[in-house]
Image (cartoon, rainbow, N blue to C red):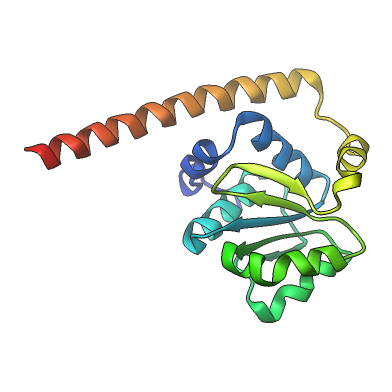
Length: 171
């Protein structure tokens, strides 16, 4: 069953992450890494995770996905299988950091608020990233340009929406 591009919320992805990080997340998903999305807004968290998974189409993500993890599920971060999970910032700071330190394998932590990616095993991040093949240069450059163009459009739309809202408030 084909996914409709209209059903994917690109705006959060395009406005929260730089182009390099969008492509890095895409690459990490293609090579079935462990991804933990972290944000204070659980609605946005769920939406962004769903959008990234839909962007993989026609490939299906068949591994574990838990868009919003509860405290009872936190040990799932220590699994040896790939996953795409989401966790509230509060829960992560309360319990998640400890669990990730105890995990044998590293997890890529994706912070929506700041648009950054960190690896839970600090001394191995470069080694892990270099072991994952890069996208072919021609494809990477084309995707980079297309995503950059879309980010400019989203930024303009957001500016117009802010201006419209400001005009409505002032009138």
